[in-house]
Image (cartoon, rainbow, N blue to C red; front, side, top):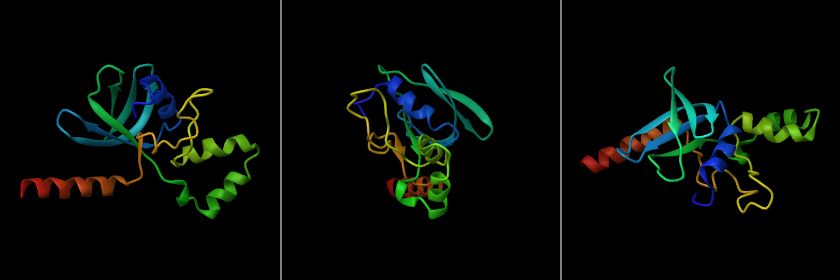
Length: 146
C-alpha cells in the first residue's frame, strides 16, 4: 500500500461512500466496522452505531489500517449484470458496480502505477463479511489467551 499516498487513497474511498469499512487501530489492535459516510482533504467520516466520527489520514503518521469491505467481481449475478448492461450510458456501469460494493479497477491519474489495479490488490479492501471478520477475530483472541 506504500505505492499510494493519502490523497490518492481518498480518491479511491470517495468512490465507495455508503459502503462498509473496517478500521483496525494500530495502537490497540481494536477492530471497528462502520459505514463510510464522508471524505475531506485529510480524513474519512464513518458512522458506527449512528455515531459519526472523522478518522484523520496523513502520509507521515498512521494510527489505523482502513479497508473497505467489498465484494469481488466474481460475485456479480446475472440480474446485476443485466441491469448494468441496460444503463443508458456504458460509463455508468463502473459507478453502478461500485455503488453496489463491488471491487473495481482504480484510476488515480494518467500514468499512475496503480491504475487498473483492484482496490483489494492495493491493500485497501477486504472481501470478508463483517461477521467473518468478527468471528476470525474472536477465534484469534481465544487462541492467544489459551
